[in-house]
Length: 589
Image (cartoon, rainbow, N blue to C red; front, side, top):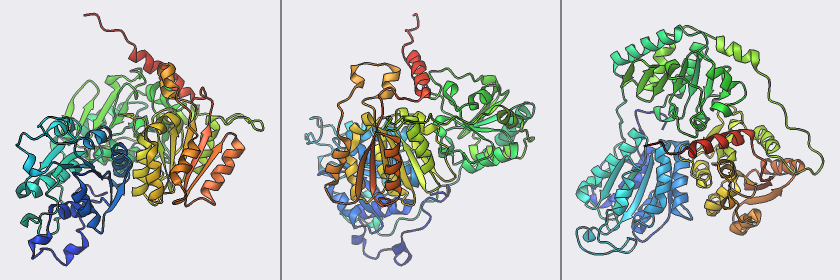
């Protein structure tokens, strides 16, 4: 999947021997879809069975290169496809008509916000029911089968309703290739009576897609590079800030090329963490306005020029619209456009092309890096604890930091884990994922399932709050069934802490569960799963030792008790600013 031009450029092995099937009866819609998914890089499909998709699931199971992962509910199946796409480049889920589709749609909206190509496949009504006045089950009781489609149109980049075999091949391949090109989810509805019917268009193996590379307008590229180089070469202490759209633009290597050539310090926006190499000698931390890494915010906001690469400025990333960034000093590099201060804007200029070309035109300038090193003071260590003193969250994350390596990946749930995980320093090749734009609590349970299924060479460390876990807890079951060995830190602080800091009320207090007992009940003696409760630092050390030693091949669930007011200082500051933004009075009419 790393090659942006040839997606799935290796055909399914059987096509090497049978490029054309002599007997069209062996070519069905279901088998074509299964082979196409394998060809683009999907090895696992997350599903919830329902009567409209059962025949299709039979064909997916019959494909040797495809593993069907049954999930506890559609929302988690969608979150798992999201997590899988983060690790693999593309993911897929299969649900049933309307009741399944409208359940998974929240996860698909999140994937859309994060630019993740997820193939969402729905088993649809029998072809004979289209165009009739019949009322079907799993609908809202109207003879209109387009409700689900209309809902998905807002959160997918393409939709295909397959109820005719003659154009099914074209509809399927167009939708899937569009997802790969646009880096967004697509919706495919397949009538329940079609997957097993042979058709001549499916008589051969799917031909691997060739997605034509996008090429910048050369004149626009040259003009953008010249204008940007003039702008930056006049600056005294410029900086570079990486954002979340580095992923969709596939520009991470070009970003490093620019950083190496320019000598500028590099920071990362919170939603871009994991996309910028933190082992780079010029890395200075997370730029998040008032809650930036110490000394990073000061260096960025005092710069006389800043290059924002793939940014998203929303109310959360701007800390309630309080960033001290001036437009006239900023160069905004988006995936296909460059805007320079208050001056010109250049379209059809692609990020990777632009960064690589700019790297060759900039004069090396390390002034801002030197300024950073001059003022930098290493972060203090958490205060020493007394024996049996309750565990503090900052101590927990000190120990999580020590667990990280190139063989691990961090999944950070929406909540205070955003802020605590943001402070983790990622070693080279350590994965990091969270969902900042959409911010759907509960996302991390399904995403951990999907990411771990895709990245079997990494051990996933998930940090999940108790409130978020209660939304999607069931799919711990699927992790155990798949033999996953993730480490889940369940932070039990009695409620929705992030919402407490934005606006408190009794609705932010939740019923406490016996979380380890719940996971033990789900485990039920089948598969490898180990749970423990942790209240002190010594217990935490012992738990981590067991999880990384004796139980290294098991799913490890560590319930960590924390005081409800034990939050990061960044959340306190961020919460008050976001609260202020949310409570602005209406503008006078």
